[in-house]
Image 1 (tube, helix red, strand yellow):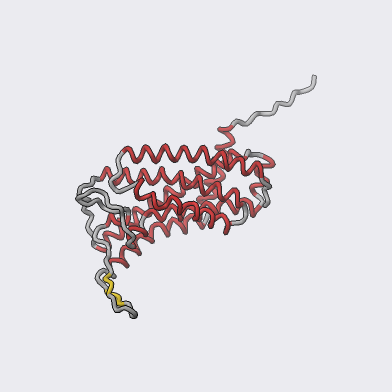
Image 2 (cartoon, rainbow, N blue to C red):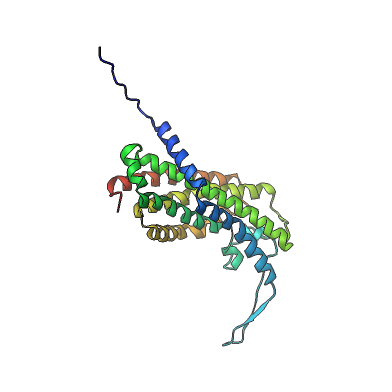
Length: 272
């Protein structure tokens, strides 16, 4: 009697677990990941300290003679967002602190995701992976989750850096009409909103494949279309509603753009 050969069917859960294990091991061993995390921590400290030192300095336009007085931050929370005034949340002008705040981390996450995915195609890892063991849908889900975790960590480290920068500069930590709960929900909303950006970055990256420069340019361009809305969607005075909307939007984008990314991988050549 011949022995029957049984082939074990590997389900989605096991495949995804295997992919996640590999991706997280690669991520946490990547020098790029730690460089970007350190940048996320140091950037708010440098910006806050430098802007505070330049507060009150005057620059003169040599052609018109018009004097411009540099205004530094007055509150540590300005590195996170715009504090509400008596009339409610301000629209946040075009000053340095309103542009160079925690929302920059959405663009920093794009750099990591694009280089992370591009390396798979440059090294031939992706082609070998799809040939022998994994499905393209698993790859997209795994890269989206890894990118989400990396982006969330960048936001958290930026927040820590902003608080350190405020303390070093001697800025006020007065919340005014806000509460600690508002700040916590603001950060949570931004973390969930990161999933929207990550889904976009993964789609652009799998379309560009080994062309890292194209992936980065495309991701930054696509991200900038939503960048100006981040401060309105996740203000300092965020509530549970902001968190829920960002969570729902993140899941919607992850599923819809994930399906598009899977289609792109299925319809295009893996080495182009």
